[in-house]
Length: 263
Image 1: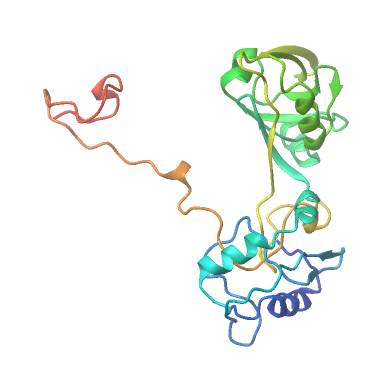
Image 2: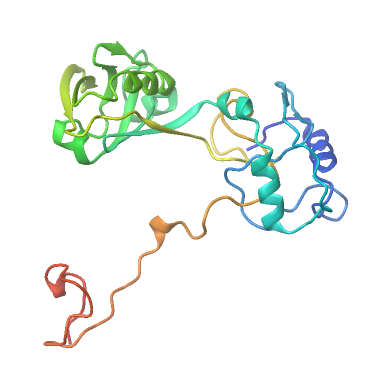
């Protein structure tokens, strides 16, 4: 993604000024983070782009001498977080009662052949109580307990209102029809947990069509990896073969042949 069209060099200069201890490529063209970047905030005076200037909160100087270790840089960034900046970002995804929920963008409506004037939140997947309710992936949420929801922030606010309830009516659009489902939770519905889009590096290739200023959704920084690699969802260890009649190496997990090759 290119967060600053036509002004990348200025971004890089500002970033280097804010964090001079980081290494630089030959020719001074770009900062080189030692690990992939996802979701931390670099403190510094500002990051400038063609859309707006974003002020950052600068942490109080410490008496200890500066250090270039990744762990200490990470700690400094975390203690210098600017809550106002974080709160200004658009939400990217919400999770509530087993449902993964996103804004229904024009791109999604075109790809899924949904009406272009349809406004709501699309469900990507249902599990747990949302699955039991009858909702399905592809449903578009229109309202929660009578409260109209057109974006993720409104959805989060609506679930805050009903978080102590044990049931709620959710109106959805499905295949041209409006339908209502009841989501139940004996211990309380709770409120939606939300996340923003991942962090991006200055000058990174744009992964999607133009959706406005990159800084509306993403934090643009050049250092520190905040996500475990590899992604735990992608770690699948193949079960070892076992001999017929061998002693169970673990607690009962169902038929052995469902996972193991039995010799």
